Length: 415
Image 1 (tube, helix red, strand yellow):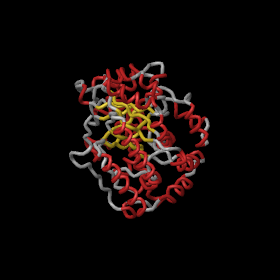
Image 2 (cartoon, rainbow, N blue to C red):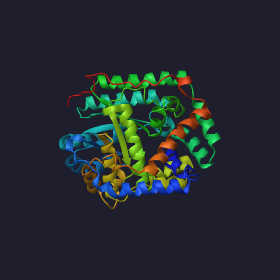
Image 3 (tube, rainbow, N blue to C red):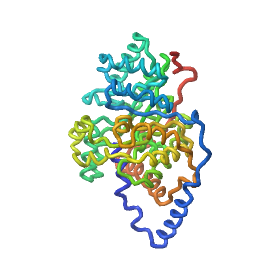
Image 4 (cartoon, rainbow, N blue to C red):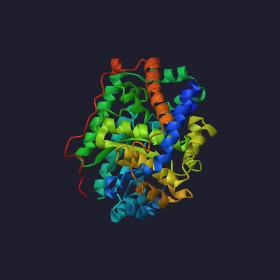
């Protein structure tokens, strides 16, 4: 689904009816802003002012361990893929022990089998609960160190395939029908409460519990619309996360469009979630060579269309500017996607980490791209409005959003 909302702006017609006068005036402002952008940066932040993490989705544990010294050198947490079979892999325990020795904090990114919906959502709450407690028991039994868990709240590939088919058919009606079919306010609130209870169970065991979600939720949440979370089967706002990151990848966007995208969603995340807000930035390197992505391309039936979104950044300087934009918006938790691509890229892992750590927060003037900012703002509003109009999901059907915060004192597991 992130793919859909990543390409939606590229096919908009928002500016076709602008007069020449308006275009000229906005272009002049844009060029003026671009000319002073490099000078519009705030003083370099201290190292501790940014919490940096990096996702790892596919890399074998033994190979991940080779990169722990670099992660430690740049004070970068590891958001590590963990599946049920991980507990039978001796390299998993070895990796956690090595991370403890090198002082790299690890968050367990729980992933289910595809037939069990892969990600965390309404259909997978109980499967997630079972896996989370199995992992926690394993950590206790083997006396390992784990900072906590991160739940990736996204539509399952099974639902995603239906939406992807509608997007490829360029059928808004078909997409709306898929989303409308999923709406059930009573079930949604029940499943949200169950997911919230699970996070509290884990926090009582001493673990942090973070969430990750699609950036499109911010457009809906900022307008009081909870129903989009239900349409995508991914409860987010009603769960008391320690931190909540929003997936904001560049995909096929231009560099300046990406700056505008980050500026918008980092600002919204900070406004809605305060210090708990985080942003996921990437892609670092390319991902079309990873075998697991070939399987997903087949699952989604996307072919080359799917692979176009797996071509990531190649220039680490682009990442430095991107992170600077997020910092300038007041978000201090940044997760990079991902270790898999960064290691294989021409730039190499260290250059990506150095770029992220070297970023300085950009001022509002330095991150201002007026044409693209208006574009993303208008399309964000349109996305929410179209969802509301075509599915009927709104605060009238699902009630008001309640942003829940974690209880004080939990989630502080001692090593």
